Length: 362
Image 1 (tube, rainbow, N blue to C red):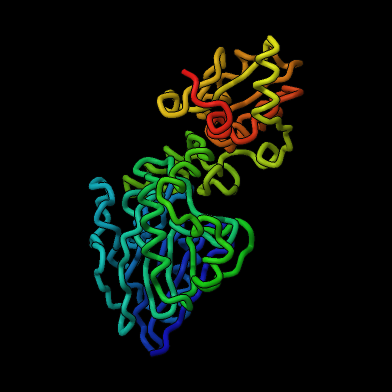
Image 2: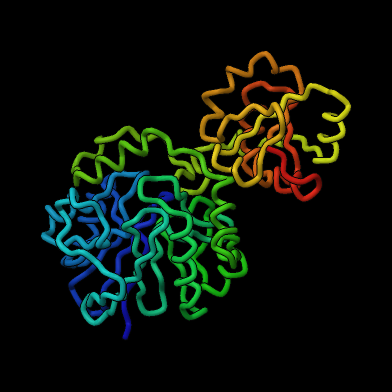
């Protein structure tokens, strides 16, 4: 069975149109409101009647065009069963395993939470529309620190996807690096987020990277919860990789190179009585598992930006950032260096390496 499939948008937010060859009834996935006129013009040019509007999840980086498209065409809006009850414009709630027929095209619904609780992926013949649960190659997947996000659920969703046929072509809702859709087999090789065999390891990995979402993203969510038709309902900055993990960290920060030192070096210097400035960026709950270095200053990674002023007197000194394995501390050191701390470094391996070498210290 032949069907037409194409990507419509020209920016990092991807929208897909598909319909059975020879049919006049079409479906659209993840429309963006600023393309509304373009969508309607295209439907008219091709003499198509829009019947199905799929939203893979509640978007946090752009205003959805679903409600406005529904008003203009009378199409039904389909969203995951866990989408907020306040999204009144939704006609159909989608459940795991549901089969939606777009003409003769069978669209199987896969519940894939993690980025948001209402995330679904759409399995078409030969294609998987992943929304934000899976991006392409080094794009990895979407952040899990938005309302309803859950790193464990995201890992479980990836396991579902990995069971699909290897020749399934992956089409995400975003691409920030000009990647082309490719097969699941290729993504298993090239996408690091699909290479974690342990859920706990994956959770720890994301925990080390995520930053709190920008305030404007919360405004966008509220606008989409309310089915806004106003393209200016929330103030949205210029495009960036905002839905990716670490996506709200400016590029000039994320690419900064910072120094590193070993746990042996830190231990030796402390034993020699040196008064090191050590900033531990873990959450308090992590101390119960791995302990802490005596006299370390605790500033959780999500508070580092706001708390750097309290460390101003150390700007010209070496400041050692510490976390569980060294990933959160790298982000913190980059933020500090960007803020003018001349010698912000990380302790390689974090408290995991410290405990392996010296044992846990309360």
